[in-house]
Image 1 (cartoon, one colour):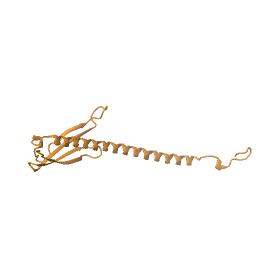
Image 2 (image 1 turned 120 degrees about the horizontal axis):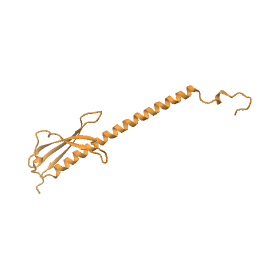
Image 3 (image 1 turned 90 degrees about the vertical axis):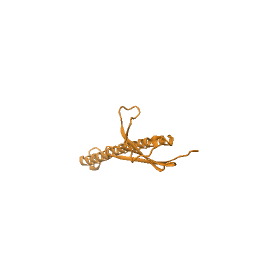
Image 4 (image 1 turned 120 degrees about the vertical axis):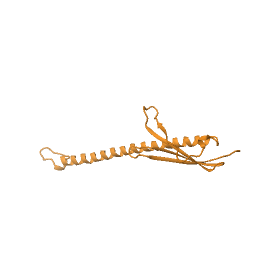
Length: 145
């Protein structure tokens, strides 16, 4: 406590300008680090959303192949991957296309009468990485009974 007529103790005077500048610098670096972490998290969330959407597209195509009749021309063996088909993702309530995907597949006869292997590939570009690919594979059996 300060008494009248007695000089104040230097320890009671408060922060010095140097201490204040150091505290502001530490706070500034902390806020900058938090901002960079937030940007990285947003980028990771976007990439995860695109990977999930690619998986949905691939699974939808695989289910389409599973529903087709065995003799369907779409289930005929292909010579490698088919030409890519463009698929776009339009988010609900948002204008424009968020992401474009390229869908292709290949069908291989293991035994033309009984077994076919089907591969479905989805390719897209991320801002930091071009040509991301997700591939799923399945086997289709001919069950005449």
